[in-house]
Length: 216
Image (cartoon, rainbow, N blue to C red; front, side, top):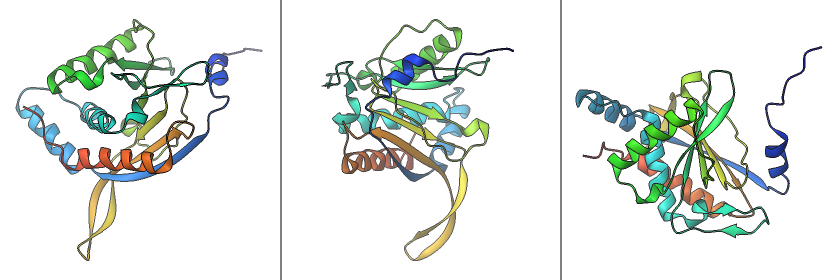
């Protein structure tokens, strides 16, 4: 009989003890991100939609200190001056790791773009230095999945997932029309964030996506 390691390591499973997970979902219009993607290509750059999504999340985190927090091993909540942002990265062997952008709140667009690329490359190469992130982002669009409910693993206080862009019929000013959207699925630890705070954060991420213009 062949044995294999569990997909969720015992160390991670132990961190889940005590977590009070809550999930909420919200659609965000995707055409602004697609337009920015085209602008990036025309400018000779390769700024990905995942990068743009990460930027929108980081900007929303600035307004919501609870999502900049982390849960210490003793269960107490730490609220640092600067926060780290995590990005889930799939590896070739089917495993997953987390790329961490340190001090994400300190970075302008170009610095954030560079830090994002370096963090993802290091994670894929297996050279990532251990670091805690307040929020983990997961992008599943490439897999064709539209909606997924993530888990949240301390010290992170939340995990935000987006899937493949898809069309929804949306009512606006009394007119129902098709709009391409992504569904954002946020799981957060209720010990740190209440429902109103999580809804406000998710709303601000949506606004960032809906109004996204590629920074100069």
